[in-house]
Image 1 (tube, rainbow, N blue to C red):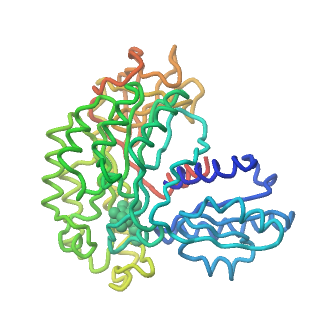
Image 2: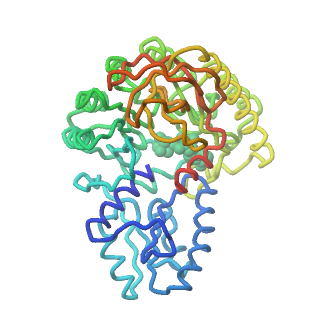
Image 3: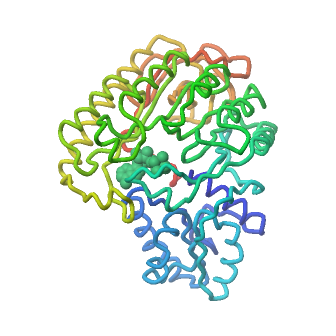
Length: 451
Ligand code: 5AD
Ligand code: SF4
C-alpha cells in the first residue's frame, strides 16, 4: 500500500515539474513515506531522520517531509521534536504536497493531516517504477477496528473507487505493456462503489485483457463471499492465490481482537475456497503474544497452521499501539515469551512451506517472467500465479513471457527449474500448488523500500 501511495505522491510531484533522483545527496526534496502498524516501523523512520540530518546540514535548503500514517499519528511530535522535518502530510492530503513543499522552501514549515471520507486519488496518474507489475489502489481506509490495529485511525474510513475508473486504469496499463495488476485495499474484499461489490470489480478487471494477471490484497475473512470465491475460480487470469489473515487460532483471542469470526468459521471458509478454486494457494498473517495469550491459545495457532498448511505467512510479534483498544488490555506477555512463540510459529511455517514446495519437484509450473535474478545475470526470476518465486535459465525467453518451468529443486522460499516451453502469451490457470515463506516480513518490506 505504501509503495502504491509513494507512486501517487511521485505522480503529483512529477506533474508539478519535480523529477526523481536515485542520489539522495542530489535531492532538493526528501519525502519519507512511513508506516505505523508496528512500533519497529516507526523506530526505523526516526533512525532515517538522523541520517537525513546530515544532508540538511550540508544543504540547509533541502526540504524534508514525513508522509503517511506516522504523519497522521505523530504530527506534533514530528514538528516539535524533529527540527529536521519541514513538512508533515497524512495519507489523504497528498494533493497539498507541492504547495507545502514550496512554502517550506521559503522557510514556512507546514502540516496537513486531515482524514477524508472521499479522497481516493481517482484522477491522479501514479508514477510507476519500471517493470511489468503494477499496484492499483481500489479502496482506502478500514472500518473493521481490530483492537490491535492503528489503520482505522491513521487511514480513516473505507471508501472505494468506481469500477469504471479502475477498469480504465487497467486498460491503460495493459496498453503500456503491463502484465500483472494487484488490486489493493486495507480490506480489499469489502470494496463497494455503491453499485458493485469486489467480485464485480474483479470480474470487470479480469475482462480487460486476458494476458494481464490480476491479484488482490488484503482480504478479510468476514467479506469472503461465495460469489467472490466463484469469481476467482471462473477466470484463468485471476490468480489462484488468496492472502487471508487469520491472526490467531484461538477463539478467545480472536474475540479480544474483534476479528468478527471464529476459528471454525475460518476453517469452513478455507474448505469452501479449497473445494472451489483448483490448486489454490493461501497465505496468512499471524500475531504472537497478544495480551493474555496463554500457551494453550498459542498451541491453537500452531495447530491451525499445521491443519491449513498455508504456503506462506507474515508473522509478527504483538506490538502495542497507543490509542487502540488492545493497548488498554496491557502488554501482558513478556517479550522473551513473545519471541519464543513467534520463533515456534516461524519454524513451523518454514517447514510447511518447504514441504509444500518440495512436493512440486518434477512438476510443471507456469511463470510470468519479471526480470533478472538477483544472483545471476543468466537467470530470470518470475512468479507462478500462486505467488511463488521461480528462478530458471533465461534461454530464449523475455520479460513479460509466460513460460512453463519444470521444477528441479526447492527451498522454503524459491523454486528452481528449467523452462520447457513459452506459453501463448496469457495465463492458462494450470499452475500446480506450491509454497513460499516470508521468514522476516519486516525485512522483506524493508528490501522493497530499499529497492
Ligand atoms: N502488532 C503486531 N502486528 C500487527 N499487525 C497489525 N497491527 C499489529 C500490531 N499492533 C499485523 C496484522 C495485520 C498485518 C498487516 O500487520 O497481522 O494483518
Ligand atoms: Fe487493521 Fe486489517 Fe483489522 Fe483493518 S482489517 S483494523 S487494517 S488488521
